[in-house]
Length: 417
Image 1 (cartoon, rainbow, N blue to C red):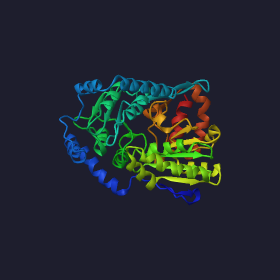
Image 2 (cartoon, rainbow, N blue to C red; image 1 turned 30 degrees about the vertical axis):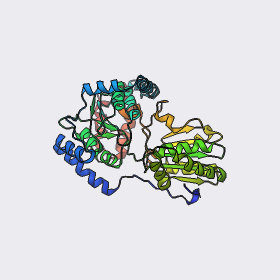
Image 3 (cartoon, rainbow, N blue to C red; image 1 turned 180 degrees about the horizontal axis):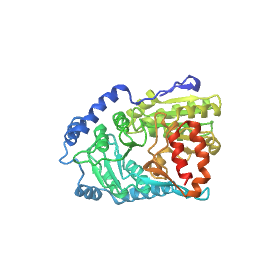
Image 4 (cartoon, helix red, strand yellow; image 1 turned 60 degrees about the horizontal axis):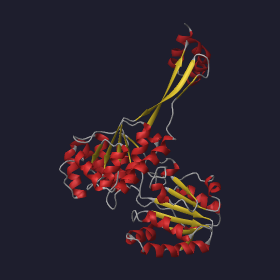
């Protein structure tokens, strides 16, 4: 299904990255929605989603109907996932502080959550209630007061139920770039958000890039990625299953295996062909693996980890003899799964850490979604006269050094009293 190649021959590509043509096309959509609101949104919903909903907002009756349509087993699973993800993110809630480093000086930081968060949940090939939980749980934990959600029509019952469980206030049947624009600037139906988060296709990502001049976003993202790293011992069946699990998302998904063992590489390549044929999305999987996947043999584990840090994959599986030791050398990855019994899919379904993660190399400079994404920090300081007398001379000296006389004088007039 896929050839085995030396790592040194592999050239990193970024399928699904936003290009100039996509930005130009999306900018027109964004500006149209900004100027014409719901009229533009409806136009693009009809054009791209082939839908003409009676109302852009999902009604309370529709949400209640969605809940009735779900089995008790599915409802319990969604609630359990929300509890698990929220519990994990509570551990990382940023905290304010206050300190008194010198007499007469009080310093501190307050944490301020965004008022309104816009959550984008993709649709299309599948329904993603898990993405609703991953986006909404950390926002709620962070203290965001209002969450709105946009997702393409038709909206799956599981998505609506997940939104209810997670505390989403309003849901809109809007997808694509028009949804991002609606949440960024507001329309007659959609309130404006202060931050927009969530995964999406190239058009969604391009729209997030454009509106980031006006609102906060989580990060730019593209098709899903996984890199599995091994030093020869891990099960080829397990490894192939992780690669295929990401490949089934999208033909543009990127699934890469790197090992120090030629024998293991060949076994994994064979397993990919066998396992792919057994899946309902076999055509998507094959296209993804053949066009964007790779099975690579590295000269050493250190060389393989250096490649990991260069690629900065969204998901990294350390299927090595000593995963914790390998982890100490990892500098760039969205989320890491340690050992053979930690498949990437378990991270998608509520073990705790977030599954909305940076792709396209963004993990070199961005972190996955967390409670910290949804807050701002504001520092403050308070000085008495005694406190200013303690640090004022230092500040006056530095103001002189920088040639900023007005800065200098604003301190001196207080020291002279």
